[in-house]
Image (cartoon, one colour):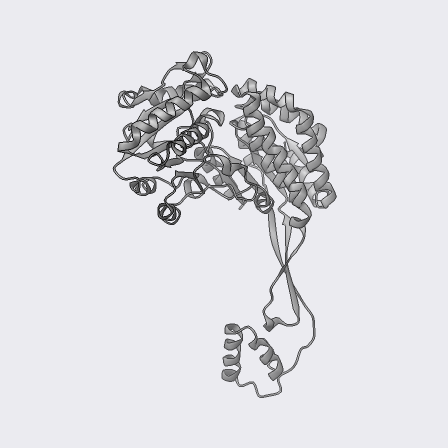
Length: 479
């Protein structure tokens, strides 16, 4: 491991990754890797998570193709230094901001989207000109093996390396010095990553999660809008890896008088999307392993939680499948309402008035996303101004993840740092400030250095930028 890291550092030191041509060649090679191995990617995702080809393309392959293509189209613009304004006080002068690669980067990816969450940050790190060591999650072993075996065949092995292994390898990696660590995973492990990074003052991006709510305020609108709302909720909860996603809807907030309407709409949509019962489920992923399966089953074993189930609840331990499950008003102090669910269980919390949802959300730590289905513009403004979250998405779910023009990341307990598109490039870059000045004119004072008099002009120069020219004309040498 130490030898591999030393080679990455030497490659970066020698400038092997700095040219635009190298960056483009690696991004094109990554795109070629995806295009030429699509069927193998589908097979690995089916082995590890039971993802269908449609889900695999939608959430993994398609996302990566789009991300690489977008980055290639914008890279030269991103790399170019940007002009910066200079106060007239410094005339003649010019300034610019130049993005510079950070160095040797460590990327930890997660198991729920084992290709997207490994290769999308890698795209950003390559585009910024870094060398990279990628550590995929061992909880998706087929996908990890694919990445370890395939990446060296396509990418520059002196600059981009992949290492397999479990928690022990992760701990060894964290003992090394890095110029940037990018981590996707649980808050528990995120704290360990931060503690290790602090020893070397290494900057960290943490993509975590939390309990992302969906506020439902469209059921009293037209029936067609209510149906669209239900469809987008079901897709945003059970579509992405059967709810095993940091941006999946964790729970719903709805007015008490409308809860029955919502439940019926959700039931009909679930049956249409995924099937009538656990034996006939289709197009839905399975739980990643027995440990996660048992954790979710245990959430339902609480008698008060079990009594709140209004749909689903069946499990198949052999196949690691849990039926899409809806719960109505489970106890707020139960584990299902205090911890991120990360699975196919959906609590519905009823309120007297939908605007109470703001206080309810604020009673918990800042979520990664707040979803709000509403056409009330005043309510929208309140949500934006009175709550804290990484993202707010109105009248849809999950789609914000696909927007390269929007930063993706959390705030507070849901993480910090951001990526996607230009924001990925920025995350793996240092913006170096550059100021160019000449030696002339340099005019010596023509008048006695009356300190108070000079001070008053300096104050004016700072207050009104153009007064810098007056200082020059009066012959006051800056010091």
